[in-house]
View (tube, rainbow, N blue to C red):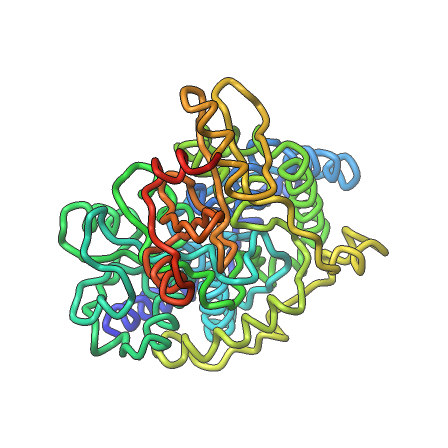
Length: 450
């Protein structure tokens, strides 16, 4: 709470600056417009409004076209952050025009913008998961912790006010654990928390993409809780300063058109998009593809889906209980008019649910495509016959559907079936409920897939 009070005081000091937005600051000659975009390069389910969009040059091209129409010269300034909190601080201070962040930070953005008379608007979604699987709690490899109940009395690193912290709070409450009294929660930036986990300073880490997958891929962590078990949507979205949107509606539309183009590129070229994002963000391509690939954990679609907005309203209660915000007018925060202008009559179709693509895939070294499989056994057979050239193999959790690395999953043999799970707890639950089922090592699962 002390941190929250300090943050609120800092934002209050920035209030006098809110009258000189980034676009206005660049308008000294009346012909130049500076557009400042805040993004999170390593939060890779925001890439269609950040890293990928930037690398494709879509927004710059759209602004050049806009400049030819209105006689202005547009300059884009990209600012990279680790979390959504500093983007909000800069937005309400008039220093960032367009930003992307997770659902919980979006609500804080809405509340603080309104409180400081610098309102913002949610204008699009980037990546989402309808079950909540974008957030994961991890522990160290070899840790004796197997369930959330084992966290009682333990130290857990989390970024308070983030989407992953919301997952942690909800999951602990479902397990009958008071997140304020029964665990020692440390409010840390993702990189700091990752270091704390490795050093043994904390017992677990709750974070958003791509940290859990990255640490697991590197052999530095093991999944303890799959956010997909909550069955509650989580997403990231694009927020725009209301002042800027009213002054520059054409720029907002240009940004959303560029985002739509970047989303189309990601869908059409998933491997190339993963490689491009990995290079820009400094992440392993295999980790990026886990989340952003065809059938990945994140689904990319700019549409402001009703189910996501409904989930956002439920998130308000969690933030209020933590005293991180007061009431939030979600309906007043959501503004789909710019996206509707970009899509035209096609927006209604964009709101329809899409069929999820196959989730089980293998990526071989030297190839620019992946191989898809109908079930885990078929994937394991392929991996066994291509061991020397497998770059990454991805399987869907048998209960939540969350995709994970095949060699990091927890495997269970149930009769003729070989079933993968993200966490030991999920595998244990299956074994308890299915007579004869037993856990097997990944190497044993490969040999059993005949």
